[in-house]
Length: 108
Image (tube, helix red, strand yellow):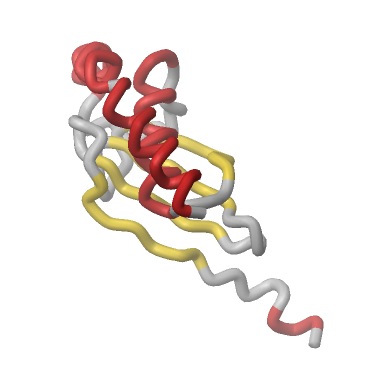
């Protein structure tokens, strides 16, 4: 787990230039809440930042101009839980929230 975190942190550091370019491209659509997915270099930088925050999982959805932040990245953890990671325009984590699914609660 520690080795994985070091690799993820290294990837975040190496994407600093990519993050700057992605911010410039995405700046044209700030404030729009039309469920547009993150694309290109911004997607790479946002994914790396979100996975570094959660420490595990895979990116399953993204959004530019989310109502809560500049970017939103949904990460599905290895145990199936989903975490919404909110990022600012520099791909820094603003907040994260684990979604609690109620659909499985009635199956017990």
